[in-house]
Length: 243
Ligand code: BTN
Image (cartoon, rainbow, N blue to C red; front, side, top):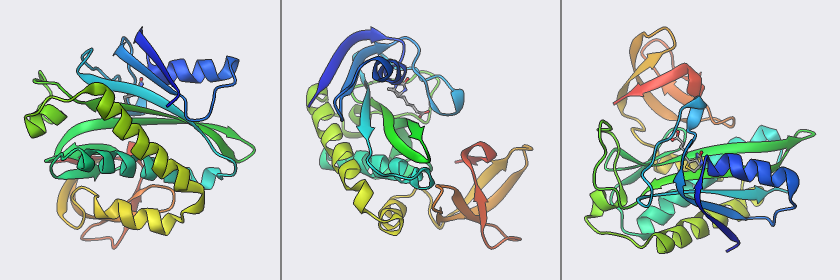
């Protein structure tokens, strides 16, 4: 693995994005930081993690010919890679909460932040940031968070976990350009949290409603069946799952 190890940085995603502007980085270069001072999460949120307990890293993956119309496939592949890695490491009941939170026993164990570089309608490279809670013993004020330790009662060697998770992610990404959306969708939906179960959601106006998750479409939107509507499509900003 081609890996750059840092003690502390604002965000491994930001660092890798900046570095890729000034340096011709080898494909699949990984940036790992012991500590992030300004970790970033989805939708502009910040991502807090404790130094030495959570793995925080980013990978740059280049693509030869991946249309932006298929960019949702990257998120599916990365989620499936982490799901596979966690199962390989004997973590119980691993599922994927749409779009790409990795859960164990219904609690969040890993988050993913994907930032794509686009040229003439194609994704030329993707910066894939992962925060994986490994040896955390406690999460203050975060009742829906968990770690590999809390799930299995075992402490892990961080380098070993990094190896397994990067191998699994990079394997899925290496298959991406020759895998169809329907193949990815089928695998992804096998692990989709609360699929076919009645779930409470909240829309942008704060209105709560019941719906059943039926799956995802090509652009990565969530498909929900409600009483009045056979199938509605939602973006991440439009809906919150209350569980
Ligand atoms: C989320 O669940 O909202 C996504 C969290 C992603 C966090 C990781 S940690 C490594 C990489 N660098 C960042 O600043 N964010 C991602």
